[in-house]
Length: 256
Picture: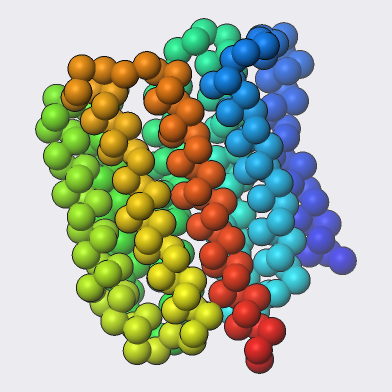
């Protein structure tokens, strides 16, 4: 009972910032036909619902999978909170919420990468170097990308360095130590989950550099379209990613 009370208080905290924002009187009504605003609204709600689901499932399944599912809940919690504010920026000003988006990514993307380490650790002993390789790779990918998109670094330089970080991550999960552990020691359910996750990082994450390239290196693109693309990518790369982990946890415990 105590665990569920803690979960309820944690979930309630997700909406505290949005409630305070609305009470401040700074909110602007979503206008009819604002499809970018619609996408922010729908995805913020989907992320909030996913947080509830992953947190409750972490309590139900528990055991060795509790950490992985809790991290999935943290990813969607952080993203939902930021989406509340990104929606306000867009609706109020019509500007792209670059800073909020990158703050979100700087927190959630390393957590997503750590999930590879966590799901493997749930079924076997994994070297700590896997954790650090994936973490460093995400920072190399994200920090220059933000600096290039925000104007602190040449956009092309930021893009190239970020792509190097992404390539390093792909090498690690396809051919590095993490891949070898998954192939040799993981259960069938974990292997399936791992494969879905690594293809999400390959295909789903490709949306971001494509958007960056079109928006900042290829003469520019409509910022509304770019935001919709980024928002839809976050659904795949945060919610679906967590569902793949939930699948492995559920299958593993059901068969035990």
